[in-house]
Image (tube, rainbow, N blue to C red):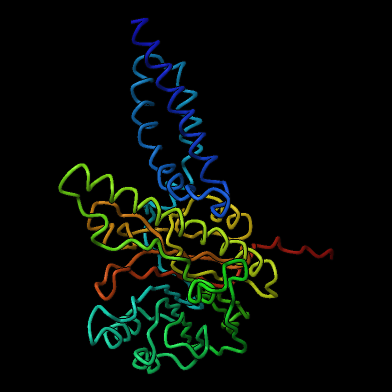
Length: 358
């Protein structure tokens, strides 16, 4: 029995050490430490061994559960940012439906824009933030949205914000810290100030640098030599793209800080909700998925198909706004799935009745 307790104690301590190291590693800026994205992928999954060992430890020696409790508390938020557990609710009448969607240049089918338009109408989407828009293929969507803003404005390949409410200002945004020779990664962001029923809100739509991986890169290699070669190539692509996203993150934080209005940040972040950017965003914005996410997991079809249902598309908003739900809709019109969020005005606090003296 003593030997069993000894092994369990040191297993728990080792797991906690790995968890702490992974968490700290994921918090390093990706432009400084290019492996941060791998750490942020691993970090949330460590909640599972902690939960298993917690059950085992309680059975063997309940006094030794502290490392497991610490590990669970460290990994809880990034785990909840992937795992939807809430139930859908009926929001108030004055809410707005937002969707962020990487449409993959409409390559999924010749009628993809028309089908997206029908989907947006069915889901009552009020503001649609798209990434990888190929123009003029977007034209069918303009039938449902009276106001459109693109960034870059004159490029045939851009991000776009489509709105049923008036856009009073829109600007293309530049990731100024990124090497300006990298064209699309320096210009794949834009903002639109939209007059919603209760206030003007600044929508920031971003498409962070892709990992550069193709669908075939993550197929199982036929032999060890090819597996090692492919592994090196994947690691090289991940490190390079991770560094660029770290530089893009610096601009995103500045844009939020400079906004004169409440912010809704949408986009394809090509990384999971964890790590340096996500942690710093949570100091300024709220992620509705943590406590109000529901439905199926996974926003990227190639990974979900391989039993990795992770979310790389995010929508966060300022604390001054109220969110009611967030979910991923698994429609097959792109290699991504749209993320839908319902927001409304700030919740009114109940006021104490004012008593009057007679």
